[in-house]
Length: 164
Picture (cartoon, rainbow, N blue to C red):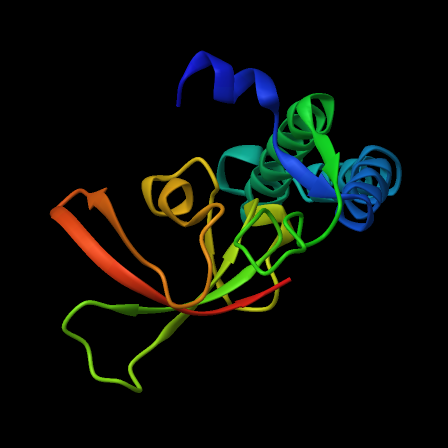
């Protein structure tokens, strides 16, 4: 990632931004209170060196604090964008793109959401606009074929469909 891309921040829709702010608020209030109560109850069970409840609660606390730090950093640098940013039929942040890799059968397609992992829709794969595939797709339209550098070499994909 170049310094210019880092300073741009993660692009989020207003809906996702609001959802992440609410998650952060919940984790820093209710979440911290609940985990403190759980740790205190586990401490009361005795010897901490062999106390599985205590160690599990501390592990959960560590993961929660990590998510809090991640959300703070993400929201601090976030840029709010409209969903399906391009809006003219071309690929942009927020688009869902159906692709066919060169050499695959006609009906062997894959769908990707172009944007932040935080914007993920269900179990659909996410491709960042700053990733090689994401960069190759931005601004392109259905019917276009693009090439990008993958770790295993250059790949070509046909854009079958673009949804905002």
